[in-house]
Length: 198
View 1: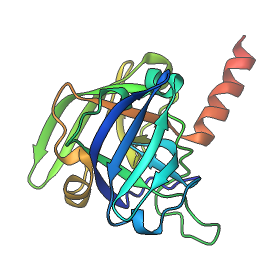
View 2 (view 1 turned 180 degrees about the vertical axis):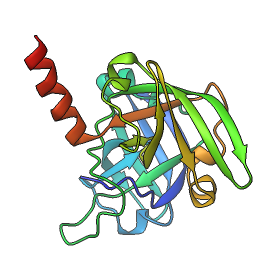
View 3 (view 1 turned 90 degrees about the vertical axis):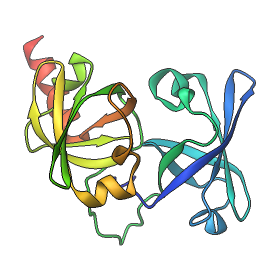
View 4 (view 1 turned 90 degrees about the horizontal axis):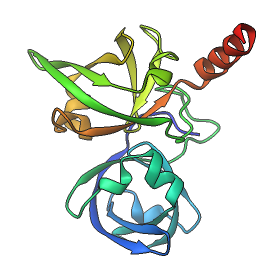
């Protein structure tokens, strides 16, 4: 379980084919010295397992399901990624409960600068926006954010200067793909309502 509070920006060192999936190698010097094989780390919000590591690099294997449901298949050497290690049971929950199970991919539709803040609109699949409510939570590329507006096929969030400076959301452009994970509690409520209306 994660919080959506990004610990570090990593840099993709290499992406290479590996069987039916890919091996992703990320330079993460601020967290890799403490990492060990078997650890979980979210990369752009997708929970991956460390399969090899050293003082500078983390190695992950990405399977077909993850490649299909996330933006990780689009990564190339030199790109930056959001990284977070799982929370400990005695940690404060600074963001919201994030599983690292990406529900789908959205795209940046519009960026509206507001002094040193930004209001950013994202397009998303309709089945995901149906689970969203204004002032609810969403994880975008692993970043825990509060929803501002929700429409049929899009939603907006306000990005504070800290988020713009310390996550990939600060430099992604209109049209770029982002991983979306809707709120865990909201999913259960939505599922229950769907069963009542069926």
